[in-house]
Amino acid sequence: MPPAVIALDGPSGSGKSSTARGVATRLGLAYLDTGAMYRAMTWAVLERGVDVEDAAAVAAAAADVVIVSGTDPQAPTIEADGVDVSGPIRSQRVTDAVSQVSRVPEVRQRLVDLQRDIIAASDGIVLEGRDIGTVVAPDAPLKLYLVADTAARAARRAAEEGRSEAAHVEATAASLQRRDAIDSSRTASPLAKAADALELDTTHLTLDEVVDEVVRLAAKAVPDLGGSTP
Ligand SMILES: Nc1ncnc2c1ncn2[C@@H]1O[C@H](COP(=O)(O)OP(=O)(O)OP(=O)(O)O)[C@@H](O)[C@H]1O
Ligand SMILES: Nc1ccn([C@H]2C[C@H](O)[C@@H](COP(=O)(O)O)O2)c(=O)n1
Image 1 (cartoon, rainbow, N blue to C red):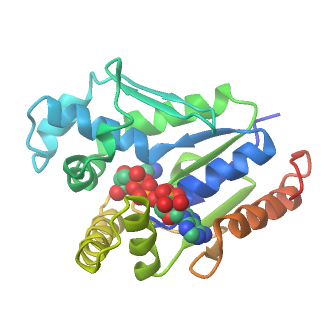
Image 2 (cartoon, rainbow, N blue to C red; image 1 turned 120 degrees about the vertical axis):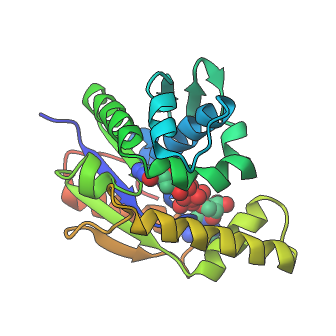
Image 3 (tube, protein in one colour; image 1 turned 180 degrees about the vertical axis):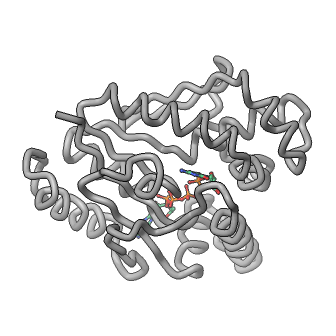
């Protein structure tokens, strides 16, 4: 039996990571933040002094970067070249460059191969990203596409950073929209809703409500999954 896969995709800040971690914890599954892998690759490419606008240079630099992801939903980890980069990958410098690096087909191929290896080694996993339902795991029995209004996404992200002043919320909204535009328009596996994905608008839902709903859908789509009821 192939491992059960739950695929969560959606634009930046729509709640994928928090939802995926909550669902994986409830269902006793592994968890993979594929965005963290693209961020770790971006960190390593920037460390090598590469211009991220130069796709050939990014592809060459990325070829020997070693990315290692830990899949415990309560303590996920991410390393690049043996360095714990869980902090640095959230810096504005990496956030501003990650969509450029993610456009490069060689980068995507390397990371998709790694993601499929992690799926194959798991006993069931929740993955979140931009191309999980369309490219990484097109046979996943449950695919969800999370969305939320830009204003809600920016307010949540700014609150997480402890910076709810209007100017910062506005700058955060602009950064989210900029990344979504690049991620949706790139040629190589763009951000897209799979034809068989269910769309879930989280704008007016609490995180607990979203997790409950995904666990409910998972129980229907993959009856073998146990999970604790709320
Ligand atoms: N339904 C919700 N209600 C309120 N806050 C939420 C909800 N879902 C997520 N959040 C909060 O919104 C912020 C962004 O969520 P999260 O990091 O899970 O989004 P994401 O889609 O994984 O983002 P990114 O694409 O940037 O990695 C976090 O602070 C999270 O706690
Ligand atoms: N499957 C994925 C996951 C992520 N990316 C790119 C696009 C995002 O802007 C960036 C960072 O992801 P986040 O941490 O915001 O989830 O990584 C991608 O192209 N494919």
